[in-house]
Amino acid sequence: MGAPLRGLRAAARSASRRDRGPGGRGVPAVHRAGPRMTWRIAAGLVLALLSAGALNWSYFVQHGAASGLPPLTLRKPFRSLATLFGNRRWLVGFFTGIGGWTLYVAALALAPLSLVQASSAGGLGVLVALTGVRSRRERVAVGTAIAGLALLGVSLAGSNETAGHISLGGAALWMVASVGVAALAAGPATNIIARGAGLGIAAGVLYAAGDVGTKAAVAGGFHVAFVPALLACHGLAFVALQLGFQRGTALTTAGLATLWTNALPIAAGMTVFGEPLPAGLLGAARVAAFAAVVAGAALLTRPEAETPDVLEASVPRARDVKTAGGVVAAVAALTCVGGALAAPSALHQMPPVPGFSLIDQGTDGGTVWSGRIPNPFVASDTRLTDLYLPPHYSPTEHYPVLYLLHGFWGAPSSFVVSLKLADVADSLIQSGAARPFIVVMPPGGLPEGSRKERAKSEWVGVWEDFVVRTVVPWTDLHLPAERTPAGRTIAGVSAGGYGAVDIAIRHLGVFAKAESWEGYFTPFRDGPFAHASAATLAAHNPMLLVHEHAAAIRARSLHFFLSTGGSHGAVKRRWTLEFERELKALHISARLWVQPLGEKGFGRHQLPAALTWAEPAMH
Image (cartoon, rainbow, N blue to C red; front, side, top):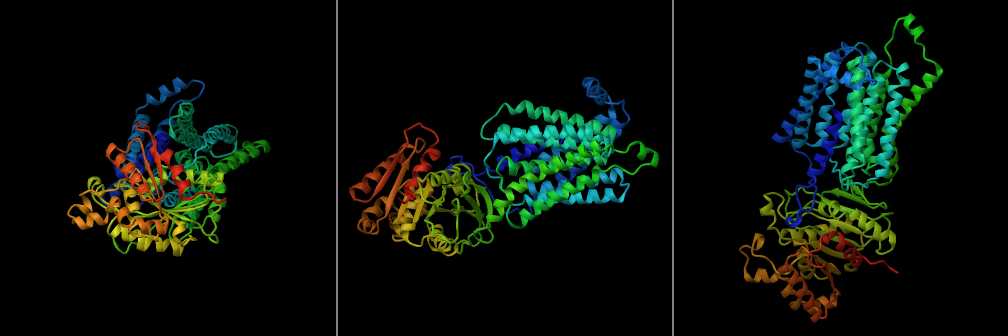
């Protein structure tokens, strides 16, 4: 039952990243506010606990039914399946498991993954209560395993699951290696480890491999080649679990399957899918979690003490001991390799500012961090600011800074998730097309309300003050930024483009460059301007401001980059072209980037040109 679950979990994460976007354009965005206890979260936790109870009770019932059936065998799979599905008690357990899986999916829809994952760790406790613990070793094993699974949940807290850099070849290699480990665990290793332990390990490793295949199949498009492999892994895992129920205890078989099904996909996420190891205490929690899972699993695999006659008859041969040792080592390696590969970079990637967390990494080592810049103008706003730092970032060097303003109803994460800012910036810097630079992406506009209400926000008033009087000084104080106008560019998309141009003109001497990406240049009579006076509208009208301040703009060497795309709309496109002509007529420096009408992918195609114009390489 564990395999489809992790695949749906990945889908739930992906869906949660699309709850908001700038300007109503459907650009994916990540909501990263810390979880507060609400009725939805409380209901999700209740469902997670019910799910854990149902799933582990189903394991208990299936084990009891399978242990009383004629021996199951892979040589006659259809007869074995008919035997299982013909047993009413086993069917009760099977359908209870499906119910538990359904409850888990519902819990994921209501509560954060970290809380659901940690709650689900208690499922092993349910299994212990049902089966009983016969030895101190089992008590230690179960306690250690539950602690490990709970720590895994804790280590996922605040994780945004931003799209990583997926290696399809790595995913395929992971699945092949998993099948090999499962074969060893279900075969030679069963001679010397606890009955059912090898099959439990095999089931968990195969379920996890199926989850990796599910993620790879839908990552960056649909890769049909993974579908047969992931289905095969799920099917083999189901068979291994049922065989384990017949040959071993419910606690050992289901416990080991649960451990590896939960732990291995997280390790694969760091190894195959480029998900970073969290910094600070969360990273330490994840490393400790893997250690606890491995320790608990190792204790569960040990066979129970038996009578001297049985022990003498079952003394393992040296070859079997080596084989089992190899199995344990291979499984442990699969679990820890993700942390081992991610740890060096995490150790060297300390937060640039206390309280900021790593949320994404570029293809060449650039990083994206997320944290809060206190807003004195809207003290209740707890939204987070994203920071991009270039490859080989050093706090002893000084970097130019690009300030990016999102559209409405958007969020800073739209640049990170949809436009893949870290990848594009890394590529430009590494190729020499752009110099290393920092990007600061603050939140703005109404922090709460419906999408319709938030869509009417503008980067004016308190949000203009936040950018100029808080974000820029904060950046100069906390980051190694070039503290002159020549080192600052302000840009934005849609309403953010309007805000960037308006702010740059109204605060001459703060920025040397301003960029409008599919923006507009005349304020709309809605939101903050719904009841504005003619004087206020004129004071925020770039079309008028460039005429009023033309001499000062030229003296301050303020340059403009304007872009219009295929989805810009005829009116706003015309405004962009007219604004560029006005700038040229006033002898103000301007660069125009135009995408033909009807073409798609404006942001993806325009971003490299916008970044290299803002931060050209120094030759």
